[in-house]
Image 1 (cartoon, rainbow, N blue to C red):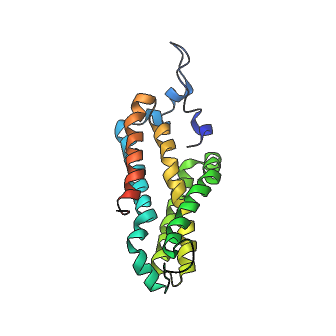
Image 2: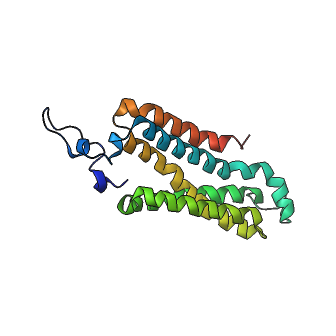
Image 3: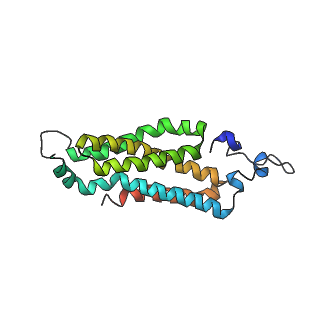
Length: 188
């Protein structure tokens, strides 16, 4: 959500007896029901987990991918060929959020998040049907860029939905578990 939509998310009640605009707005996430807050938080964490699986699951099939594209890690290059699919994803995930997250605040987080998630799903498909190693690398870089934004925006969603440190503690802990768990589940 854009901070312009509902005021600064750190806004507190000004003084006893006066109400802040946030308290009067039923659309503001702080005023949502507890069930709705948890539904939004858990869906965002599930997306974070699934995106993380895409980031590292390819490492389990490195030898098969090399065989499929007639590539080999036994060459004179310093970096094995099987590193490139993971590196492309991670490079996109590291760079793109620095550009996209500030823009999302201007455009609106909700609409941007949905659009980026749809694009992410679309770019998972070319990874599965890539007919060349270069296509795989390019589609992994694009999916990583989109996935990095999806994963990085979730902590902002948690702070926009839950008011105060005590309420945010558990949702942000779930976010960290989803972020790390999705990446580690397939990297074993």
